[in-house]
Amino acid sequence: MTDLTHDKPAPRWLRGLISALDGVTEWTGRAVSWLTPVMVLTTCAVVILRYFLGISSIALQESVTYMHAAVFMLGAAYALKHHNQVRVDIFYRRFRPQSRAWVDALGALVFLLPLAVFIGWISRDFVLSAWQIRETSADSGGLRIVYWLKTLIPLLALTLLIQALAEVLRQLLILMGYSPDSVSSDSDEDPL
Image: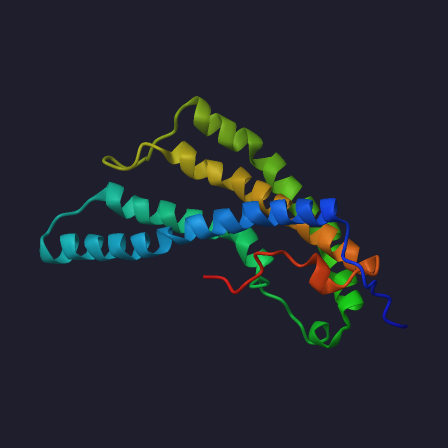
C-alpha cells in the first residue's frame, strides 16, 4: 500500500475541535498533577505527626487517599493523550502511521468509548445516592465529603470520553490521508 498523505493540512474546524478536546484534557491533567507534591507533603506530615509527636489525624490520612484517587482518575485521560498508557507494542511500533491509526481508532471505538460510557452509566446511581445523603466518612474525625470522592468516578468517564473522541477524530484524519503532523495537537509537547 502506498502513502496516501495529502500535502494540505486537515480541515481547520476539525483541527480546532481536536485541539479544544485535547485542551480540556491537558488542562485537567496539569491541574491535577499539582496534587502529587501536596500528597507527598501531606504523607510526610502524617508520618511526622503520628510517629514523632503522637498525634493522629484521620482526616489528614483520608485526604491523602482522596488526592491519590484524584490524581489517578482525573489523570487517566492525560496519560492517554501523551501515550503513557500501558501498551503491548510488539508489533505496533513497527506499523506505518496508517496502520497505527487503524489500531488506535478501533481500540478507542471498540473498547475505550464503550468502557467510558459504561463507567459513567453504572456509577450514576452510586454517585447520586452519595450526593443525596451527603455521604461522610465512616470513621469518626474523617472527611465529610465522601460524595465528592465518589464524583471522581463519572468525572473519570467524562475525561476519558473527551480524550477518546479527540483520539478517534485524529486517527480518522490520518486514515483520510492527512499527514500525522497536520492533525497533531498543538499541546503534544512533552508532559510535565
